[in-house]
Length: 197
Image (cartoon, rainbow, N blue to C red; front, side):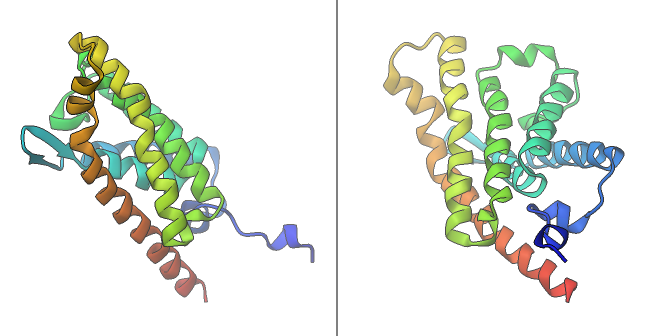
């Protein structure tokens, strides 16, 4: 028997659903979008800035589904929100959300899920330190689009002001969420391996 014949799927959902059809993949993408939508409603405040479970959802969905399906799930999430589903943070949704200062982060979530999925496809999610590295990269991705978008929408030109609104308040929560995801995935893999015995 060749090694190709016994090769194991790379991401968690492929181990749980080994023979996914097109319909199954569509369903997994929809479930991923819904998970992010639900976690986006979990909110707490650090000072005046609301912190949500949205980015944790992005990492979990990207890591579980892999690069392509993760990006598809977050694209679906964005489209559903713009179509009016109340899936964005605070139950927001609708086409006017394009003008929200935080919409750039929603766009960036697509890349973040792809990065988390890319890392998972390389088995980084099975080791806490590697998983943390992948999830930190995924956590950083939304800021690449989000900060310039926020600056344009709010008319901010000073980089320190943009950072104060769109970066600094999210550093510690981002580290915590990346750490949580990095701890959860190796644990999930241990459970999967235990049930496969």
